[in-house]
Image 1 (cartoon, rainbow, N blue to C red):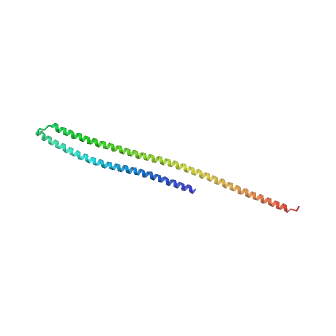
Image 2: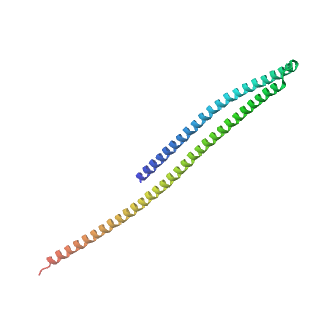
Image 3: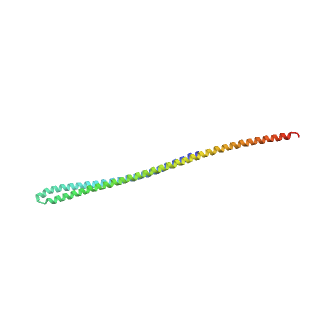
Length: 190
């Protein structure tokens, strides 16, 4: 019986170790995911600052072009050149916006992949826990069955020992009774 308790304790200890191992793996995965996201965030912040400064430069340039456009009208420079420069600046701004959208989309895809990876780890962990629980229940059932068989064998053995003791006592009584009869019949005169 104490072996069974020790066995159950060892099973529980092994189960806890397995759970701790899986949780540590999940923690490591989440820490890696977090550090990856932090690095992405820093890259995005740098990129945003870069885009802001470029945008500000472009806006200043547009303002200068507008101011120079007024001066150019006075001087008689072609307005088509100014419109062309403004269109180039607008297309550059559009390219920057598209780049930001592309980077954001890539980040979202990476985040989705990380979430799927973590979910796969959780499913695997759940499957392992379920398999372990099934094996544990199966083992406990076997142990209980063996305990019942052992108890039954012990009871049967004790019953057989009692019967044999009773039979020995009965045979000893019969043998003692016969000896008395033979000794008392030999005492009789012939």
